[in-house]
Length: 302
Image 1: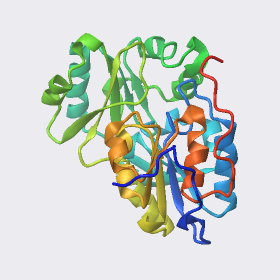
Image 2: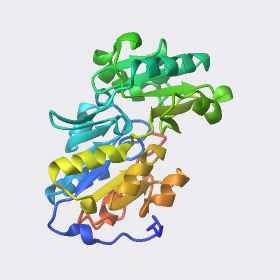
Image 3: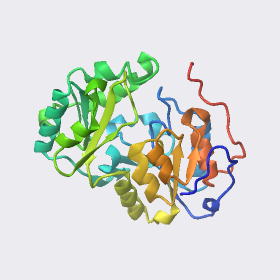
């Protein structure tokens, strides 16, 4: 697919028409960086998108309890969560798929066998393994405090894994045991594993969902509900769980170029989130009138 890259100057496109577009924004690596910071340029651009009559939706591998209130405050009307296993607009639930108990048991046994730290994710229940938060929270960002907000956000939703109902699971596997072939062989029929976008201490993040689910499922459900055609959609993401979303949307954008498979299907390749990539991408898609091609990016060392 021919793509615009971040070496080209973005120009206004057809999406600047008066008709509303549905804009689906990934969170980790797209809206915020590894320290959970949202660039001011992104906040300004998203405000412009809304002011121009377009509609914003979070589109993430996170489940609802993992989406902080301040993320909602950027103007999201709804959520595609759990990598497509859940979708809602306000209090209206459009998609809510949970794994059968027997599959939860099989996958839990797999992660235990691999000495993984893992968390079962659902829109109203979270099931972390023993020691998961102590492992993950101080190691997911550049500084131990970067992800404290995550622990605070999910704690009210924590349940025992044995009694929970979950959409997906994310597991952090020690690198010496992190074989995609081994994980795939052990999956129940009808499931797939992908590499997640948030790492921790060199452990490899595996996300497992049913094969028929992806962010594209949630995008279609939301568009049908709000009456916006797929021809009026934009999807932005940075990792492998964004591939179907970027393929499905009329305009698909890769934030940064770290995921080769995503770059392959994207219409536009934007700079990384820390280089004002989201603001750049929204302008390149014709969704803002901002004449800036960039601002002051986030400083990794700060």
